[in-house]
Image (tube, rainbow, N blue to C red; front, side):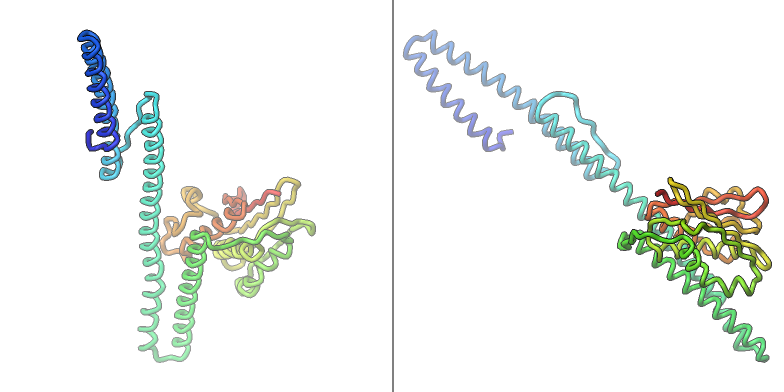
Length: 329
C-alpha cells in the first residue's frame, strides 16, 4: 500500500501536522496535547482502515482481471456498492463481457473457416480425381470416338472446377465485405431475360419447356449484375432438377409492398429434411453423388440478403420445387 507515492506523501504530511499540533497542545496544556494526540490517532486509524479496505478491493479487482486474462471463460460480476471504484469495476466487467463475446465469435469463425477449407479441399478433389481417371483412360483408348468422349468429359470436369472456384471467390469477397452493391432501378423482365441468356442453348438441348409470366411494370431495387448471378444459381438448380423434357415456370408478383419472383420446376422436389439446410454452404443432402457442390444456393442467398431481399424454398403440392425471392419496396 505504501508503494503509492501520493499515499506516502499524505502520511508524512499528516504525521508532521499531528506532531506539530500535539507539541503546540502540550505547550498550552497537557490535557490539550493529549486530546490532540488521541484525535490524530483516531483519525489516522479510521483513514488507515478505509484506505486498507479500498486497496483490498483494488487488489481483488486486479486478481479478477488477471484471471480473466489468463483463464478463458472467467468472468467476474461487479458488486453493487456505490462509489467510483464500483463504477470502474462495473465498466471493466462490461468490457470483459464484450471481449469474451468477440473471442467466442472469432472462435466460431475460426471453426467455420476450418470446416470450409476442409469442404473446399474435398469438393476440388472430386473433379480432379475424376479428371485424372479420365486422362488415364484416354492414354489407353484406341478409338477416335472414345477419345473425343473422354476429352469432353475431362473438359466438363475442368469447367466444374472453374465454376466452383469462381463461386468460392465470390463468396469470399462477399464475406470480406469488399463488394459494393449498386442500388438501381431494375426492370424485372429485363433481369430475368439477362439471367436466362446463358441457359438458352442447354434448355433447348434438354428440351426443357419454359414459361415466363412477368408484368411489364414490375421493378425492384438492387444491383442488376449480382441479382442476375443469384437467379442463375436458382435456374441452374431448377434445370438439374427438371432434367430432360422437364418444365420451368417463372412468375412475378408486384405489389405496393414487395416484388416477388418465383421459380418452379417439375422435378422430384426437395427432401423434407433437406429444406432447413438447403441454403447452407456445401450442403448436398443425402445424395452425395449429386452433381452439385452445395455452393450455388448459398451464394444466391448471400447475394439477396446483402441487398435486403429474402429467399425461400418449398415443395409444390403438384410436384417439383418452388424458389421464391422477395424484395420489399
